[in-house]
Image (cartoon, each protein chain N blue to C red):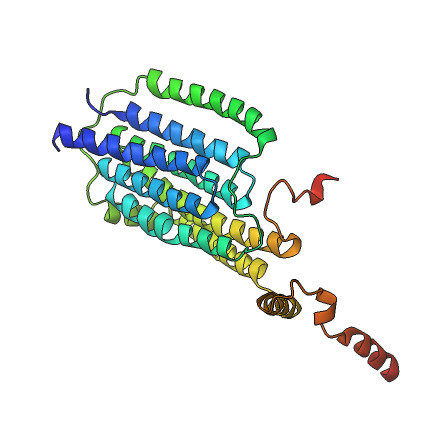
Length: 104
Length: 206
């Protein structure tokens, strides 16, 4: 049996689901960010698999797309961690369960 | 590429990726979770290499393994009195698990059941040159928007994270007090009260 696109897509789906569960269930804000990073990585893996095994027209554009996703993920992490620092400075905690100021 | 070597690379890198991600889920210490994230990212970079996407693999190692993990470690170190534990919320873990299970079944079914057509044998060559050219020629507008986005994110992160002078004074004083073993200092004691003096000054001048 040769390793085909199905293997990579299944692996990407599994990685996405683990990241999704981490992002939904972790208490710590930085833990949630780690989950989001895993989800973005899974999407990148899927796109690169399509770039390798898909038709020749999409081979380049998917990789350019991956470069953009990585850039946006870097921006997202920088702002997210700065927000975590501000929340910590004001409330001495970064637990998403205890920052309930907007609950009403 | 020999078939056996390819199989070995795929399965070991896949196990590394999924194992690292699972260890993030299990580990109770946040710093350990970031280290496992690094391992998972390295596995993904290796998988990019098996897909002969060398430029993306190098970018992955540089940005994710090099920069983002260090940024996360800095953020953890800068929040010393927050909880270091990385545990799940018991109340939301059940429903979240249910949703994730449904997503997993759907995505895997699509991935396995779909006919993805014939496999293209030739991989893309000279990727760095091709990606750079298409960024400048074909994707110039998204490229510029990305540059603006990165600049805005950088400025925003600095604006959010930088401390005002008063905050810095309070922070330094509480750290000093902690070193001397006195516990936290009341912020009111630390900031010298220039506000009242200013008010009386302005009243006197007016």
